[in-house]
Every structure is written in C-alpha cells, then in structure tokens.
Length: 80
Image (cartoon, rainbow, N blue to C red; front, top):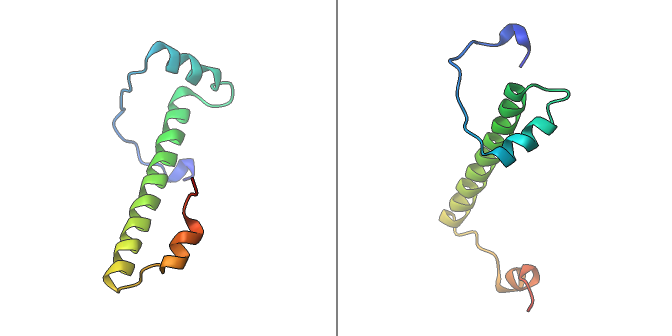
C-alpha cells in the first residue's frame, strides 16, 4: 500500500522478551521496529488466510466426494 493511501489507525503495543527484542533490533538497519512488526504481521496474516482457503477448499472437495485413491495416498505417505 502506498503512503498516500494509508489510513491512520490507533497504535498497537507489542511486548517482547529481551531475546526477541534483540533479534528484532538486529534487523532495524533498514526498517523501523514499527515497519518490521507490520511486515511480520502482514506475512503471518497472509499465511493464515492461505491456510484457511486451503482448508475450505479441501472441505469443499470432500463434500463433493473428491478423495485421494489409496494409491495416491500411498505415493505421498511418509515411509518408515
């Protein structure tokens, strides 16, 4: 999102333990803490939305009776 289209929102406080804060600060040479936090949260939210979409897609496939064959499952199963 470009800076001009950005809507101001209330600030959010995030508490970090000392170790996590030190790691975060090691990455602040190019981005501020706030920018890094936003980036991390945006990436996490994107991953969570993808997970939900994949789960919903799998449920829809199951509802339609689309299941993997025994051969497909065996092909992708972990071997011990």
